Length: 246
Image 1 (cartoon, one colour):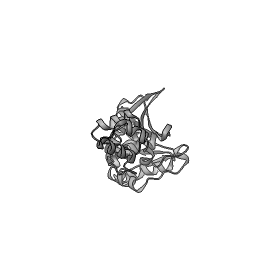
Image 2: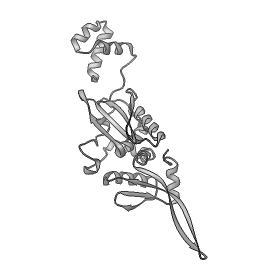
Image 3: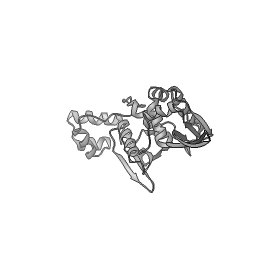
């Protein structure tokens, strides 16, 4: 992995006609890497935060929700960072969706699927994942403050549906509840769907509440770490962009 100035120097030398052997000795870049840069039409885009590259806002909003729910970043050799989104293996559609949004946010690195017992991790390696997810830190998210940067707030405000989809895909569910009513001496059972979102982080729960409020979706808190959307109009609205897990 090389930074943008180093790649620019190498491309300038290649364009000037300097041999790959000479460039390799001077800049300390392998000839195979130089050859791939020579044969590719252009440098891949850099980091949206520190190098000014473009960031696709809709998939990022979705990925931010997934990251806050079931994501983490770990550090590898040479400064490389591994973004991992843990997905329940029982839901192949959600695994495919997670892989798609990771690829959409950073299309110039392969996206890997690592299968473990009960879950599949979507993994992507890059040196700039913490630039896009400054919420990274030591320990579980619910044991440290989680606050969005102003630029992240703007993206979530633009695409609250996609942000909520990420949150509910990771830490939410759509379930069938039931209740009983007695009319004319006859007790009948009624079933109705509802959405539930569970998270131990009060900060992440607050972000979910704020996005729901923006869309006018009513919610309540039956427990400190659980949010419920049960009113018919709220469930119907979430059905438009979340839906049952598959």
